[in-house]
Amino acid sequence: MEPFVDSYAGFEITVLTRRDERGAYVADLVVSREGRKLIDVWPQTVQPEWGTREEAIRDGVERARCVIRRRFLEHGEHSWVTTRERAQSWFNGEMQHHAGSTVTPS
Image 1 (tube, rainbow, N blue to C red):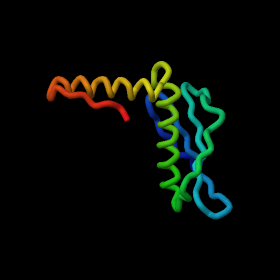
Image 2 (cartoon, helix red, strand yellow):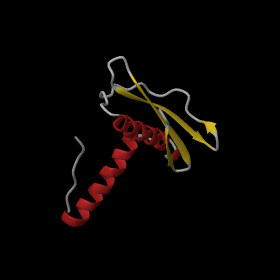
Image 3 (cartoon, helix red, strand yellow):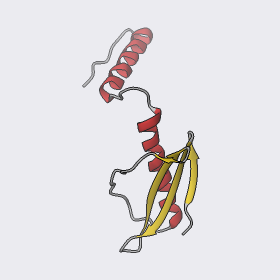
Image 4 (cartoon, rainbow, N blue to C red):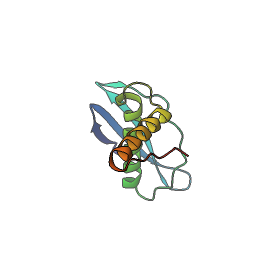
């Protein structure tokens, strides 16, 4: 089958589809930039069995874009704790500004 190629944020995503032993479609991914392959090992996921090639391609593109965002586009160390603290601080500031009360994290 012909590979499907997508461009995203300067990266090239190539999705190769194949059928597994049960006949479901599976997407194998290659992400490159300027002709250089960037990701050698992909996280193994438990994914639904795709009934069509198009579904497998869509899933492959979505997974590749997610990995590109996390590995190459987000700046600095990403901490969900820090993100939550900032969100809570902003929310408390808004609540104080509008109603004069705060909400404590659970």
